[in-house]
Image (cartoon, rainbow, N blue to C red; front, side, top):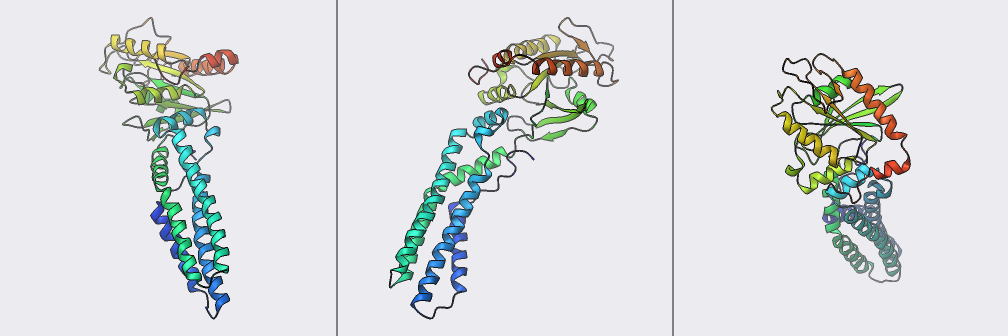
Length: 338
């Protein structure tokens, strides 16, 4: 299950208030009032019931959001880009405060009810205080629900060795992913692309690998990207990944070789992950050899795909066996692409 999928819809303050007070009224309706003691207990029960509904629901909201300190760095970066980790922490802290404050206020009013000759008046005052506390965090509840709706659309990227596929549209990226995974890859929503990230999986020697193609991110020049897209690319640095750049020397993709080379140079310059350059469409008569290319393949005939896979797996092992100093030097210094 993707890490944000267990977050339920976050109710508004009005929805919580209606729910709590309706449940409290139901608790009162089941009581028999035949004297002072029963009146006190009935009003006390209403306050405690409402308070419990509030505190339980608020505590559940906080509990269902993941611990941001324990998030994989990839998801942490995307969360920060999309909604802001500090804003999330502050809103969750406000909700947690409200939960504890409601418990405290309810207990104090239970004592007042027991000492009162007019428990209904005290209970109504208690309800006013509880409603006021909930109303004070409505903005936080609205923000948390908006964040929840955004974060649930993130792709289910596993913490496992990854091949990130780059290159201009129509060079054969989707065909490659389909070919090596042996099935139609999952197309998951992704907040920075129009088509959604493509994720496939394959297993070699008992180890599962994932392959990820992000149309809209790694298929056009950096100058055409906005700041958020550039930050989203940076988040990919934190995956246990290598990059496969596919180039189409036949130009049947609709992009000239010089433009594809320019994109390759930009990704090589800005993407601090091991990079393999492969030429696709070797079956086409207009295919030409290129100095920048390490291997050739055809996703139509299957030619060269095994060699490409073997080299990618070698690169993953080389990266994972690199020294800690080497790995730390691969991370962006400031969380952004120059």
